[in-house]
Length: 407
Image 1 (cartoon, helix red, strand yellow):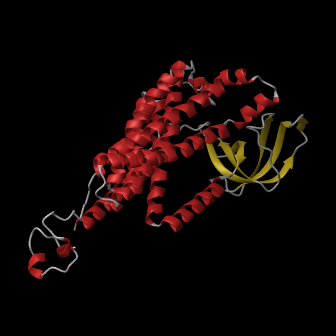
Image 2 (cartoon, helix red, strand yellow):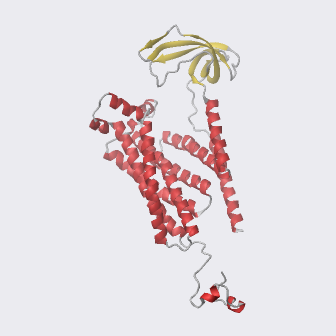
Image 3 (cartoon, rainbow, N blue to C red):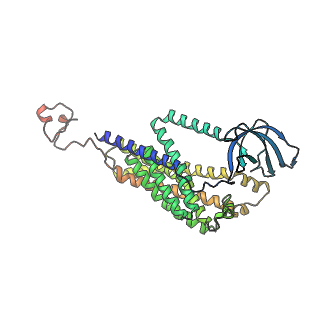
């Protein structure tokens, strides 16, 4: 009955969180402004190209491509028109097309619905991105079954909470650190309950994650002050100011980004520790609180080492080209370490590593209080029972006495 009740509650939780996902999909962000009032996004196929105005300058191309396209979707599907693809000499942003490519375009129309101008945006990648997502979901469900379905819901919930809640509220002027902490805490609770169910290992991981989340937020705030960093080190941050958000506190957004980038690792390590200690307690139900906590600390020492290296590699990977530029120019190491961009990544890494070092003992202590001597089904034999009685050679009369349990 107890197991059935827990199963019912877990299905109810799953239904509630799935409802939250569907609600987040439907609610608007409040920032659905289009670049042009009368612009319509459409798929288009390039059927001809005029590259006479495009020229090569060093390793980049500049000028323009005159593209003849066939619109494939929207109210103008089937029509052919010309579009201009401007090249500014920035490989990061420029797209060079070839005949047969499928592109995403913005079609500007007049009041009568006639095409006025068509702007090339980029290659159309959405269908391919959906295919990658489908492969991920299929592999996850094939390998993990029901847990895989829960993981997909958790994955969707994480993306939607950031896209539909955190970013819009931050743009509307709410405190970035508070919003990120609330969203991160809700996400931690939802993800851990989805993955681990309504179990003590989930509760222990949640407690450890939320405590370390608060510590991570405080460390990120202190670290930006200590290293004298500001939010402008983030890509595109100045563009946000020029887009009409001059009052945006970029430094606080940067601090919130540090916390969010560490949250996944905190979740991972917290559930690793709590799951491992659940197994220890289940196979050794008479283990003492001190011994269980010590086991968690021993497990944590091994896991923290690999997790901190994972964080380091992730952050270095995202800034690999910057490091290569510094090295190619022969920049002194001290100049590299003191540059704002590298110092920001060092802060990212160190805050994440400190949080990981703390989450292991905090989760271990939490497990020690939640797991200690849980569900012990076998007790030591009382001193009044003889060895002969315990081994089963005693009479049935003796076995039925309250002081001599049957094994």
